[in-house]
Image (cartoon, rainbow, N blue to C red; front, top):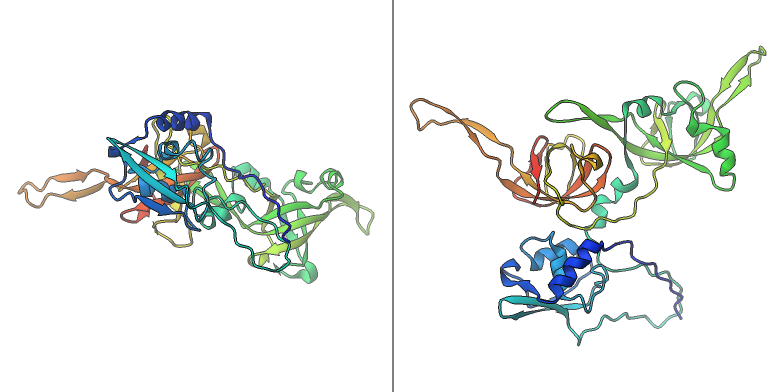
Length: 379
């Protein structure tokens, strides 16, 4: 007999999205909105995403509430679509309706043996989870002051400068005891170790247009637990001296170094990114393509944007990527005038994490490579 539990899916449906779906559910979707090769029947497969299925049926995938509205009576939440279910497209006049096939209910096969397991919710996600999971907890954006004042590792055991999982290290704040390393924080969580993220020196993110620093990007290289707090002590000569905090390295993706910084661990964000278009006009530029020495981004790669929460961006916003405007000389004209070719649409991306002045987005569809400085606008 299987012992199972299931968790509720973390994907919300906003009142606006539900209202759109309810309106469309009464009439269906215009045939002009359907993708040219929208299938009559489609069996949901493991690995499918909400974006992928929407793109299969709609010319503009970010308008997924219309797709959901086609089957509102059967599917109350679009994320509760499961592998094995069959979607059936029916055309009536100039409208289309999408429904679940009544003759193919989803089934779960259990092998004939005793086992106990926990079942996760297996509804389809909005995007490929593996593409963005590392950015939900292991990347942080801090301002210059926070980065400068972040506690740093100052020593390791036996004067070693490279540390690994299981090692103890010693840390202190830039200007005396740090809030992240105080005894109050440790005592308040005596039954649960204080977890800190270990960051390499953060990289400045500059606005491609103005050159202004928008924040500092810090990538975690490991985790540490606070063992003893930073405090004032007494040296052998009886003089007051600073005793650095003791931390235990509990995770290391690469060797931890003297000088690496410590910040309170960010909570793993709920994946509340639902594809939709921004409600107001927005435009900006790509700050950088993620990856060492990566110049161009392709499909399912991450880019940093020079717009954030302060500009109205939110997780789930779909944006159109434009090719960079190109200058050239008209060699067909004897006067050789300079021309500026317009920035044509190059693809789509979706924001999945926002900070005050920058955001991270996943490239969903692309024609040519995306690079730093390329512009984006509403889809």
